[in-house]
Image (cartoon, rainbow, N blue to C red):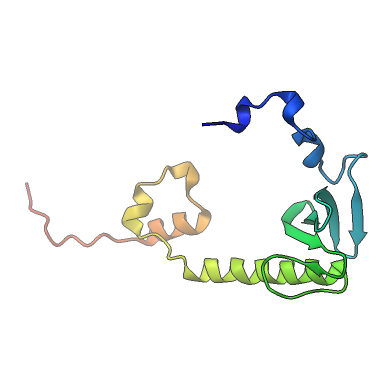
Length: 139
């Protein structure tokens, strides 16, 4: 089995450090569009760009000869800003639906968490919690 870590430095076409340049690096190839920063990663057709909104990377979009795409839908976009906005909208919806389907832990499960890991809402829930004492026997 060949491990990617067993490859010699000379086997790389480009160094991995060059591919993963942050948007703040002066050597990064950047496209700035309103609200987003696109950082070129690699590729010829399509060219792959990491999309940043503020300081957070939200995903990847692709530049073809005739159009742009974002990989989360099957749409073709004429402009990079449209592909970035489509990606951003998808990620926002995905985040909301994930949050809506998560169930909060029960109070008994909260007792198993480290107290430093509890949020203020969880502390408030535990403060108000009254355990049900159905099977207690006086000693």
